[in-house]
Length: 128
Image (cartoon, rainbow, N blue to C red):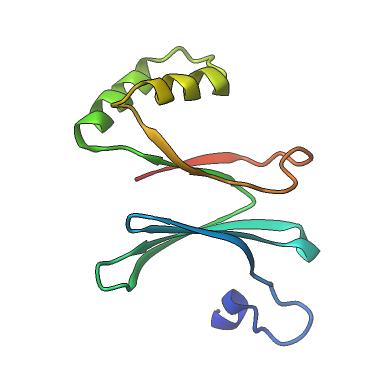
């Protein structure tokens, strides 16, 4: 498995990890990239402990990812507000409502795929 994950697999069938961006906030590190030959897009979300050791890895393939911060007391209020929201809200109105509320969820990071306008992928929110 290590050969596959590091791109060191023998032959032409290996997966190539080509990072396009690496961003960090708090104990979370997000790496984003693609294997253009196979038309695969990936995001890794690492949790790094106080000693600098990776304690958790989340890996997403062909998925747009939004990382959102939910804070202590605000997260309970936000969860209730999201649950009570009308089912048909467009993305613009829901993100502006979140931005205007100082106690609501805060978007920390979003996928930045180059082919976003030409290829639709399922979306996922990683709440931390």
